[in-house]
Image 1 (cartoon, helix red, strand yellow):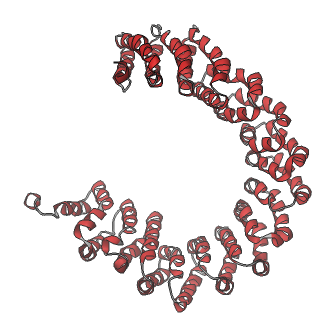
Image 2: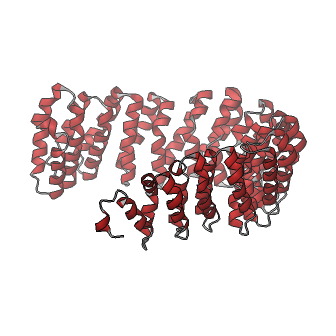
Length: 594
């Protein structure tokens, strides 16, 4: 193509894009693929079908990232090729991509195939999409067979009974495939197909395949049957579950592989919801207790997250007799990860048991967690106290809560100190203002002097959040009298932290507090000997002006005090100070102060 001779051609931009698709370098080709819809719109539906798709078919031997982008774009192409009537023409290039070696390419191609098939008519599903599934299932490479497993559910409801029968045979072929990766893919996509199949067909056609998968010699296949089991239980009646699935439930809960037990534990609440009351009491309670004392810490960690969800299906008497003895074991588990996980969830048992039983049976466990040697355990129990507080009140916990908070606040790891700071506003709202002022107020102020800047910054944000909880009047009485004297501290870091703190809290206090307390403190540091202090003053003043400018009574203050201060800083000997002062003067606030 001669670019100079073609500039007046309306399709000249399209020709340039096609040249980019043929480019030797990676970046232009990827850019062209991402704009291929532009080519299609300019060419029109017929030329897209007849020319562009043929060009795409010739371009399928490319780098994986480009093929991923192409597969994704083709899923949006139905309208560009003429609508659902012609959507089937996209199946050919997507079929090639669905058999690619790279997993991500196949996944994108399968997603696009499903999107395209949703737009096709029933006739075109039978005429074009089912043969594609057939070819992929019978492909010689496992890649095509793995991709085929993801296509059954979309096609299943839009075909005749005879074609459904063929699909089940093809599915059976994948279930019995020699390659574990194909069986894994088939099992992982089985739940979506189960949702489309009628109950009668589930029992006669799907259950035998499911039964075979649950006995697979690869635990990576068996563990994927757990979501399929839940899907089957949701579709079948209680009697059918009892007759056909009960043995599978028990087998998965007591599987020899810890990975299968882990998957079962992770989904136990969903399983209980799906199987309903009879099997819960006859099978799941014992299975649950077994998983709570499992030999693998990973399994115990997973099941600890399910305790409150499962207990909502049990009576208080059963929880006390059968579940709580194992709850005690989790609380003192030798794995800190198990304890940490359970500390995040044990609080949710309180609403289930009620006040009296919570105080009698759970409170000792809460208090033990608050004294745990592992910081994450203490953090997790503190961060989820709201549910317990609503049931029994904070009085039962406050005496043990305070020492735990203090220990965390003084932990040698700054990340632990940072984590507890983030929970303080939530704890404060539960404890109330009096308890907070008496026990935690000084602790919050001490963080402003921490040696780690991230802690000092978080402490300033913490004060802002506390003011949101307790109000401006509380800030005037409890916070400002403690912060403002630090402005005169001989240590410049304290003065710097004071600027940070009062600038941070300024948006949540009223204009009077800014005018009478905060602004005078900031202006007192305009001539500070430390340049870092002075340029932070400039940054702070830039923040203050919009907060003051909404009121007419502060206009004079801005004109007579703020503007002269910024002008003085703008003539500072330090380059950084001048930069931030100039930035403040030239920002939107300049419209207010000029």
